[in-house]
Length: 462
Image 1 (tube, helix red, strand yellow):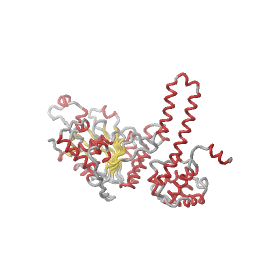
Image 2 (cartoon, one colour):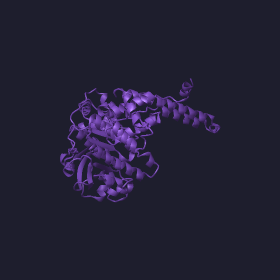
Image 3 (tube, helix red, strand yellow):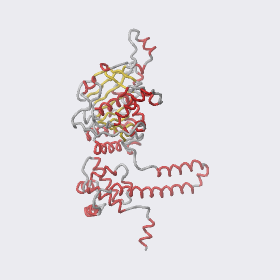
């Protein structure tokens, strides 16, 4: 009777479900990828299970297979083996569950009881607000604090993750199109950029390389990055896009416009004629067959991105990652309170580590500092990379987009250069760093209305 009363005093928990999650991971370590998007160590009520799950997460992030032996070694490294009950407890957890097939349901049970504990804690916090007489001077602010507490509890624990581009509403509203799996390219082949002149210098984007594409806002970083993504996908490669600035619909619009040479604004404003609608429908259908996966979570940490990329590679294969853009990523909580330069340095190192660990090129768009605007030529330099010299250090390739038609008006150009034609729709791609080859400056044409860069020999202005 006293034991039952003691249990009633404890917050909601499900120890059996927790043990079954851990036991399932020890039976089938690969099942970690099935629960990792929704389950974290803080969801476990039992401290020993939190220690074990944290160790499993560390093994997963390091690419080490999870089993009883590797977990034991990790717990020893973390000085937690005795704290979790030693080898006997690990063996007991394995024996407690016959297979790992139900791990997702066990994980749901764990997260549900965690939410109930959060709700109870929220009630305590709201009661404290209600009992604080000082809040009588601003009841509206007190109500807002209480609402925020409840809203935070009500948020879905599952983070947004990669979504196939075919599931963009702007595509699915046309029709449901079957997804083509295709074949993954060889793990040593470079990724073609889609630009003949650029491939001539770089030989494509090489696996394990970090490539930085930098420019001032509005110069076409996202456009060029999406052009390379579309080219890679057309080659049958699997592309993962972390878009921290644009939503999946905007990306679908831009890729469709570039593919079928339609005006982006006309697509967004739904002002296409019947013939153009047919072309857009064909483009959406074509995009739906490509292996493009988009994660448009606006607030991302680099560790979450690394985990998502690993999971995508395990589940669907992965050949190429695009990050748009680097300065919008959050670093770790330990660095976030420090200066931003240190945080960006950490992000840069992690992006390079992702490229190496997953053996894929990572193309990271980056902002430039305003220093470039104070020079007469406004031509970017490596020192202009915003907030961190570590970006230059970590990157294997650094490219800049330089456009005079964005820097100077046509009238001003004609006054300064009376004998030269205004460079409308022309861009210089400056390869300022190339760890494996020469630097160079290439000229490309840009069709902003289509969202399309083209090598000059390929350029058409029809």
